[in-house]
Length: 555
Image (cartoon, rainbow, N blue to C red):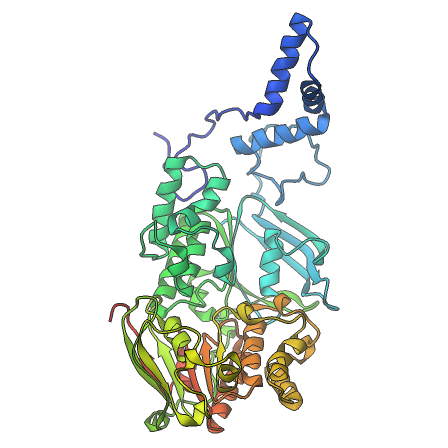
């Protein structure tokens, strides 16, 4: 009996050396058959058949047909460079058989090798990162940390070969990847490709030509590993942000990737869900032998699951290995003030139902920082949207104090866009959903300009406080995840609203920007602004949880 292979590994369930069906391209093969028939019978071929016969005979077409056949047999997976091209100096034709070497066995080639590697966005004067040298052994697990905007997400995208083409940027140095790469992006919304959960998880396997029965076995196990407790036919549009993150991770695990690249995979998850994902990733990497690179700001929680830690410095700083004990603890430097929760409410929700979720009743005290917590899928974002007037509640009501309304009539969802923006500012869970300008500076000026406000000094102050000044001319969509989040906070504050609603404000923030953002929020409450934030961040809750509202699914 052969040794069982892990069900999530590529090729599980297929006997090594088994003969796969020959690739058939009906149109070209038909041309060949017609050519042979015509030759035997002496008939003249029609023009289209002659053209196809000539096309099939071209060396370049034969080369691509050969590559496609090798891909179906799996020959491309071992020793192939990312992108399918040959190694330097390697013949583009058939590769020699791999034989066991005689004499001493040499160490296996690394799963990933970077040499003087770098990437520069076309719209930036300085590189996102440069002079990165790294060798990642098979099965090795690496944690990468660094300041917000240091290029961590760009590094992962460049390793996976999806950082962009020549019009979007330029690459320096060399990169060699041995095997299949699976990348989970910082924004899981951008990786949802199907309308149903099962189809989305199966998408990668289908592109790898995994047999149908094997696909659905992998899908079920991957879904269970990441703790995504919804049916396979569940609509992906109804998943919360945290559930979409688990969905993206499940799709990568099902592919049986040789190298896993995870960009803040637990950032939008509740503590229980985050722990489950960390354990699942570690178990899969351990049992499958896949190599792993994780980028995280909540770095200490990953230390038990990685072999080493490295810090990436932006620009030409490179990648430097550090000790796990050198990682700082996240702290704002001050504590929550529960006494503020006794103030009169600025916003109240009574029996509010959104998206068919249970009715919610809560209030936001004036000049206090309220945090909404709870597991993924409890409806936190839906409630916040109703409080901000972005959706109409299916039942129940949202009431706003006169201090905030300032003459606006009715419930917030009945107000004009201008009335909402100057009274209740909302920061979405996905910052890109609210970007409309080509540069950071223009983005900050949109709101005040539409409302006829002169907010020049306030915009400059916000850019300085949130460390966005050096990015004034950058395209908002080229920013890092943390920079996008700080920009979205700044745009909400530029119009000086009386109430500010934040959905996961500390996502993608390093320790420095976390502390700066926390201090800014405390200054807002000191100035009489009412703030409400959805968060899974324990440090944020300890610093700014003047009042905590916990939501549970189904209650």
